[in-house]
Image (cartoon, rainbow, N blue to C red; front, side, top):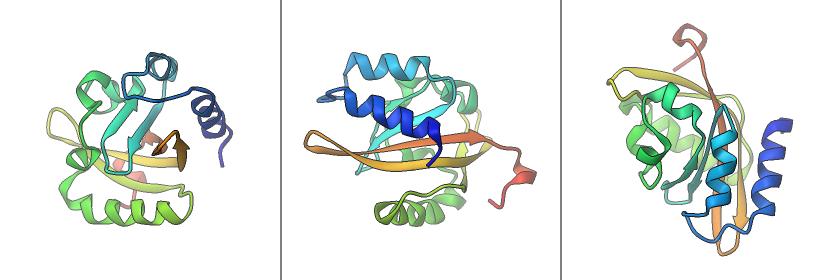
Length: 139
């Protein structure tokens, strides 16, 4: 597992996250410059880093509370759902899919780390991604 996601997971575990409105969690994500996301098992976005605004044109406030499944490029929905099912069994790295930018164009993402964490009575997914050029992807 990449060191950056280990550090992010460690920080999350140190926070006693009880609600989606946890100020400490949002502060942590504000200072994380890359693409990091925490989502519930149902797919609801709990928190995202500020890098998402540049990547897909949506602010963290616009994304939080939405379901990430609605943001995946339609042709990638099935393969993305399959990758999420695999993630329940093991951590995945290197999965590529596309998301819909606010302007309607596709944005190709490579998921460089993802893992499930038990936080209180909730199971949350922590994922880290990077934007890649479409020529470099298999999407």
